[in-house]
Structure formats: structure tokens, C-alpha cells
Amino acid sequence: MQIYKVGGAVRDRLLGKPVTDIDWVVVGATTEEMLAKGFRPVGADFPVFLHPKSGEEYALARTERKSGRGYGGFTFHASPEVTLEEDLIRRDLTINAMAEDDQQNLTDPYHGQQDLEARVLRHVSPAFAEDPLRVLRVARFAARYAGLGFTVAPETLELMRHLSESGELEALTAERSWKEIARALMEDQPQVFIEVLRECGALKVLMPEVDALFGVPQPEAHHPEIDTGVHTLSVLEQAALHKQPLTVRWACLLHDLGKGLTPKDEWPRHIAHEHKGLKLIKAVNERFKAPKDCQELALLVGEYHTHGHRALELKPSTLQELLQSFDVYRRPQRFEEFIAACEMDARGRKGLEQRSYPQADYLRGAATAARSVAVQPLLEKGFKGPDLGEAIKRERLKALKAYKEQA
Ligand code: ATP
Ligand code: MG
Image 1 (cartoon, rainbow, N blue to C red):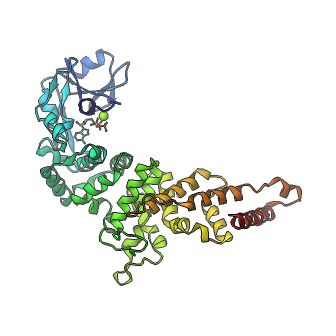
Image 2: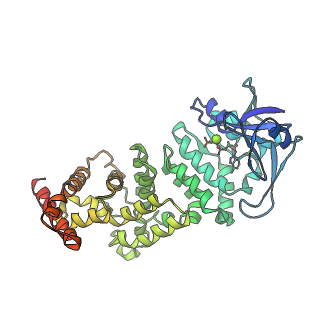
Image 3: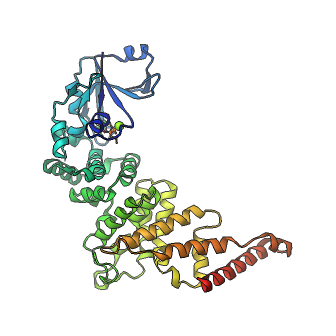
């Protein structure tokens, strides 16, 4: 049997990028031979094995054919006769379809190296169209390598457009889609992921609520970029520049969905968009079965981001309600993430990226003031049950009034 490094490990070495996980392909072997060497099978009907020591993935060279809709609709064929070239041709991009032996000899039948040099993301063969997940994968690689100057080849974009229009994207499971979305949002330029999806028509299918923001104007005085879609991309860009976690990036993407529902005769104003957007945020959350912390933060940021921007003008009682809505007493971290999302929203405006955001420290200070109310003295005064709850609230309100006066 011959063993080759494939995929990301080869690509990233040639790009001079750190290689984190290595995928291997094994040519000329049978399942029985792999098991005899101590490899552990990954799944019952999948020719993939884990190395007994390193735990890295070794896949038997295989061909695949589409036999139905969605991802279940594949039949794999692995046998010792399948060649390296046959295995590589079913891969998504030419830059991911190179293999390397232990002497670093490159097998590159589809000219991946040439495309690496030309900074092009190009599909390997028409079989690309057999798995709609590849639309998201290409957009994700575009987000990752945009900083190096990579773009999607026009003919690949055309194929992605065709896939998006054919209805195939709808067959993707929430789990597969979310995995790609989550990874893409954590890339260096997550806004490029959304841009590429939009360009090929996939955004309209996957997240019509986000797609609808393009072409919706906002008041120029607050939003020099005017377009709500452009603003959303800038907010995401800021979130990546400021190394925000996934929860914050997800909330940034969805925070203004309500603006897509504003009747045209109310443009460019968006009255109560925060509240109107909640049902859209909920729908997107559930469509992709986003993790609970992402879902919760997106809804809270959607509802309260304007409160964040107006923090310095909020009455102490409103501040108190805000803190209560975030359950800041038990979950201080979530309030921090809210503050971060608000700041990214403010910075995601044309020409205002560098402007300071004093609301952030003000909100932090308010949370600290409210949290500093001690319960013990109230217990000592004899408060119990609901009376104790009321007493704590009164003390917190007092603390917030004092905080606002001295701020
Ligand atoms: P990463 O750095 O994100 O791990 P990668 O290229 O290694 O990038 P993997 O998801 O680990 O990506 O997949 C390894 C290889 O398997 C890819 O390089 C590609 O050749 C192939 N591959 C993975 N998923 C698909 C798919 N859905 N369609 C076609 N080829 C795929
Ligand atoms: Mg990999």
C-alpha cells in the first residue's frame, strides 16, 4: 500500500501556513489489511480509519457517485484498484486535490499548485455539483484566504449559482450547514463568506433574511454607508478584526434583520426594527440549530442593541431592566458579549470604525454597580422570600442612580 498526505495539509504547507490536522489517503489497500495493521474503523460503511497511535484520519482511496438527493445520496466505492488520481478528482477544489508522499513528491493532476500561485479557488471537475455543501466550503475558503488575495474562479461561481438555483441547497442538513457557517464566521474575513454566498445566490436560499438587507437604506446621518447589507458585512468585519468569539459574530450577522421588514414608505427609518426582527432571528437560529449560547445572544443583541448605543441616556430603571434581561447577576460573561456586539455594530459604519465607544465602559460600570449590592445586610434586616427580592431590586436601583450621577 502507498500512503499520501492530502488536502489541507499539502495546501497549507505550500502556502507556508501552519498545518494543524493531517488527512491521509491510502492507495492499494483493503479494509482487512488496515485492520490487521491496527487501524481503527471510523464508521461501519465508511472506508476511513484512525491511526492506532497518532489518531489521524486515513481514508482508503475511493470513488463516489451520486445516487440521490442530499448527503445520504452517495455511494462510495473503495477498493485496492482505485488510483490516487481517481480519488483526487472527487475532491472539491484543485488546491485541495493535491497529494504528497513521504519524500514530499507532489501528485497534482488537476493543477492545484498553479491555482495556488494564481490565488484561485477552482473546482476540480463537474462532479463538484454532486454535493451542495461545497458551495459553503468554497465560500468558507474564500473567507479564510481573502487576505492572501484568493478569489473564486468565474466558472466555479457559475456552478455554485447553478447549484443554488436548483434547490439542492435545501437538502443540506442543519448540522452540516452549521458546521461550515460556524467555521466560516471564525475565519479572518467572515464577511467574504457572506459576500460569496450572496454572489452565487446561495444566501437567498440559506438566509433570505440576511439577503433581504441588501438594498435597504438607513439614515445617512447615522449610517454613512447607507445600505443595511453593507453595514452588516462591516459589523462582521469589525468583529473579526477585534477577535470576537462565535457568539458575538453570529449576533452581529443577525442583529438588524428587522430592517428587512420595514415598509418602503417608512425608509430610511426603521421604527421598532429591534422587536420586529426577533421572529426572523429565531427562524434563522432554528433553521441551523445554532448552539444555545449563539441563539440566546443573537436574540438579546437583536432586541437591545439600541439600548446599548443609548446607554448614557438610559434612566436608572431602564438600565436595571436591561441588566435583568441579561441575567447579569448570574451570567456576567453574556453581558460582556452583548457590549462587544454593540461596539462592533457602532464601528461597522463607514468612516466611524475608529471612533471610541464610551457606552462600553459605561455599561460595564453599571453592571458592576448593580452587582455590588450585598444581600447579607438585607437578610440581617429580616427580609425573606419575595420581600427580599424586592429589597434587592430597590438597592440595585439606588446603586444605579448613584452610578449615573457620578458618571
Ligand atoms: P481545513 O484546513 O479546514 O481542515 P481541509 O482542506 O483539510 O481544510 P477537510 O474538511 O479537513 O478540509 O477535508 C480534507 C479534504 O477532503 C479536503 O481538502 C478536500 O480535498 C476533501 N473534502 C472534504 N470535504 C469535501 C466535500 N464536501 N467535497 C469534496 N471534497 C471534500
Ligand atoms: Mg483538514
